[in-house]
Length: 87
Image (cartoon, rainbow, N blue to C red; front, side):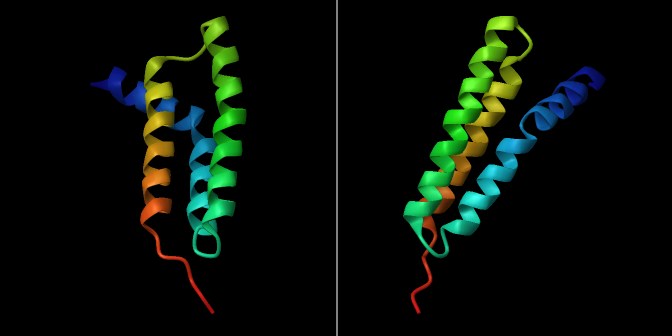
């Protein structure tokens, strides 16, 4: 049980920046979905490049990669379902 909690804490720490990017993208969806999709895409591209480099050196585990996929998928679904504000 302690090992599982340690791995989850490590995955959250590894994905802290992606959580921040997903929150910014969801908040941006209120004004413009295009901006939200662009923020999410830039985050996925740059963070994906970092993960692929870390996978080559063997410093990333599959829990971190899976958590990144879940974070970005939840953000994408949230952006799709949010209703933008129209003044």
